[in-house]
Image: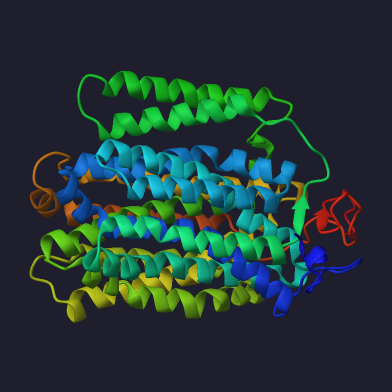
Length: 495
């Protein structure tokens, strides 16, 4: 049931949702709740890893696969998920993703072995690939152009908070009951999100339906899975797996280049703004994913924090994201995105340097809190302008693809960082987790700092502040389509 069907705050002819209205807030909060389940789950799993390791007798390699199995399916299918939303209806695919993610979460919570858990995490990635791109493209396609950056900023900040409260909630659940309950938490949250989406979110879709690129989806999935296997697993299969991954990746690019209806239209990268924003995304989220993975392990394994104490340590990061992300989105509208997208990653990189100083002798106030604050400031300053820049760089019919590309880039960055960085930094995959962290933790954090710095350089050189957030080409009127709650994109540039 769409907005028009429910009769509550429906958009009408010549209208779009406005920031600050009841209808606008319902859409933002519903999208945050839906996509936030995915972000929340990811950070909860980070906190749960040491307990999972002890319960299921899993070395570091198994923990890497617990994260990477999810990231493989998520990053490889995000583009397809965005295309499905544009074609079949963004709200419909978003709700389908919620059902799939919840079912997989139940499987994870019941997992008797690490292999079962890894399989469940892979299925979670499939569900996440359906709902994550829809959350952002729904906002981009329903809000008035003048309010779009503020709405995206509010979504970015609140979604960031869901990621940040994950360690706190997860830590409490893990210490009080079991790590399995952290997965079951998704069930009631998803039920609320489905109800709110059906009642308060209008359906939107692209004007022109195109065939789905299933060949491209299969090739990119094979490429990412093979590359991940080669990065994590040692032994004689590493080289063949890497070869298969590279061949599949090249084949994917060739298929996308020649296809009339590609999952990834390569011409989208002709936009310098779009390409530069995604390079910055890659650099920043590689550092973010690796640091959350390693800092959480460092706090629990090396410093003896409980799961709850490790979660509470991230509260300053949470609060900064909550308070400052919407303001950063408004700032980028006034001064353009280049300055916040340059300064933000620099601050995040300084936070990584401070994280590198955490040792078994560290105290929270002297060592951990300053790192959390500086890192939180950098991320809060960057995320909303970065997201708005990506979404403003494409035409309306490509909003689902743009959202899918940006989310896929961020997840692929996390996938590579978690798989490769421990090896580069000298953290051993087998044997004692504590010994491995002692050997390579500081080096890994410094690599993360350099990744942030690279993102700042790209933004400073290639992001242009002069270009405002552009209107997305979707119609003002509601077009009769059999569902009075459906908004359809048109080719009218005046829309």
